Amino acid sequence: MLRDHLTALFRLYVNPPAALSQILDRGRLWFAALLALVVSYVLHYSDLLPRITFARPPLLTTALLRFLSFLPGEYLAPFAVLAIVVVPAIILVRALAGFGSFAVLLQSDYVTLLICVLMSWTAAYLPLTVLRLVIDTPWLDSVLPYAASNLCFFVLAALSVRTVFGTGLAAGFGMAAFGWVAGVFGGGLLAVIGPALYFLMSPFVLYFLYILFASDFRSFGDSLRSRQRMQQQLEISTNNPHDADAHYQLGLIYQKRRQYSEAITRFEKAAQIDPELADAHYQLGRIALEQDRFEDAIRHLKDAARIDDKLALSDVWRDLGAASLGAGRIDEAASALAKFTSRRPYDPEGLYWYGKTLVKMNQPAEARELFDRCMEAVRTMPSNRRAAVRKWASLAKTELRGIGS
Image (tube, rainbow, N blue to C red; front, side, top):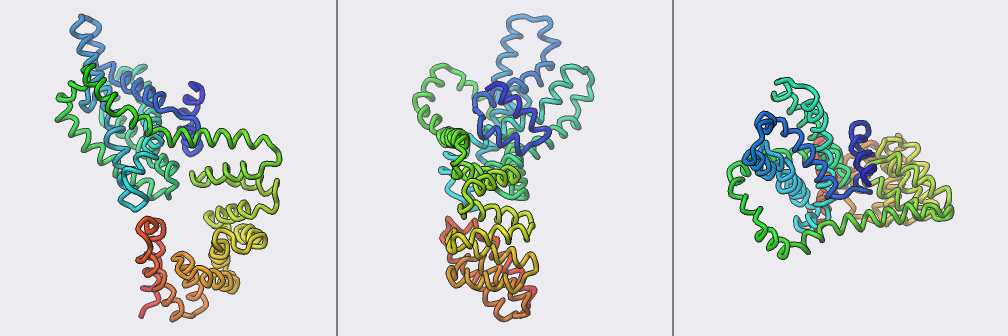
């Protein structure tokens, strides 16, 4: 376990997405927290060296109290701010965007995101910590080195959000920015109320909090542990040369994390084991479409549609139409999207792509109708689904401006 965690930590410098995926698969909260606390302690330890050199018991006691302090710049402050402010703030943005209630998302994703964020913070500040140990120069206490470490942490935190939630890169950076700003204000608040929190160090208070919240705290990690166990079982199942589904399920995991090369490898292996596994061809087509490899997408999606004409509630035809439009095959796109919208007349994405196709075919009136239907479909969508499709209404509105009245 130690080797896995350290490997993932140093891998963050060269291949962050792969490292974060490894953290999700093998990570443990206690180890990530321990690494962060060690780096934080060593980073600030030199501040006390002149006093500890002439050590007296009261000074050692002061050092211990400083280690437990919640004040910014103290040893425990980074962990406190990340755990209490930054990660919940990011999850709050996710909830406000319509992807679930805050309580449910906190229960399912808090520990997962916290592990990634703690490891990201450790990786960002580890170089500065090492430099402060080996080089004695006032420059390392200036703003610039800490700003560089903060920038590194911000980028890694954004990639963590992207990996955990499967968002786009822009959304990942936006959510990380909100969390970082919340962390700044949270750190300031802790500076004000921090001294009042020393009572939490009382054994009686700690025991009472344990009795009161122990089951809730333990349940926070249940979702992560379940996913990790499932991942391990799937990895074991791939040893069976005839088990295409294990490779397919692993491919879905990597696809959600946007690790497309690993996902493609798994889906291709699944299709190789079972050439009639339509879902594997479909996901290969979706990845190719995401990467603007339109001809590859058309090939895979046609294979999937040949095997199962109604695959994924006929989404295969919608994606085939989008890929054909991207490749400039306008007539094929119109045919596929006409079939899809006849089966799913209220799907915003399908209506948008069909409208785009009709614009290319110089049919503005018909395209305008489809864009209007797209926006109406989003407006009438249940709230728990609206977050995933609202972008199509925005794109349709933009297209309507281009068409004019």
